[in-house]
Amino acid sequence: MVKRIFAIALYSIRQWTAELRILLLFIFMIIFLRTDIAVIGNFAKEMDVAVNPLVYPFYSSDAVKQLILLSGIIFLFSDASFISNSQPYVIIRSKRLSWVSGQIVYIMIASAIYFFVIMGASVITLLPNASFQTDGWGKIINTLAQTNAGSLIHLQFAVSEKIITYYSPVTAFFLSFLLNWSVHVLLGCLCF
Picture: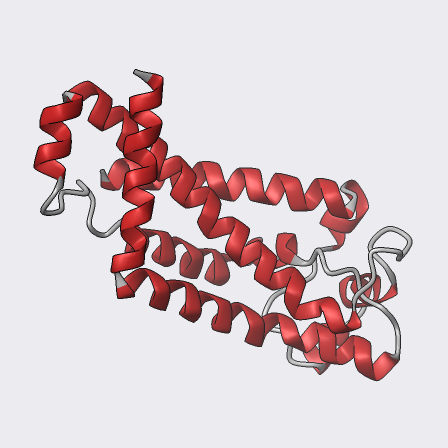
């Protein structure tokens, strides 16, 4: 039964290749994210200092950015109950319980893919001016958190000093993924 559940989930993900709206969603979200985060990369380039590229926790802690991320996941799952032309045949062959379980696993996997792409894009955006070798958060992130430099460079989200104080970059990045993913899985299940 577990094999059948994962087969159903992977079948639903393979359906993305036939849907232009999924590709457009990822393109739109990546462009939106890049325009906001590129400001930090430009600031690092001006200062000639490497920046830690794990800035996604600050981006996702902004209420407006979080609403935009939520709208993206709602758009991703806008076809919930996930009934396409072939789904009635899948339901008949796999039985209802396996199909429902497969769709829940699909929601979990799709949400993870969504955030891997978005978080990956945030890291890739800063790579030309980034270094993982910085001590802790690095000079650029600390400057943005402790001064008004963010408003001077027109940064569209706040760099929280609390996140810098209490979490290491990797821990904050992982917790940010975990919290966003769990909320979006819940939202996907509600849509379903």
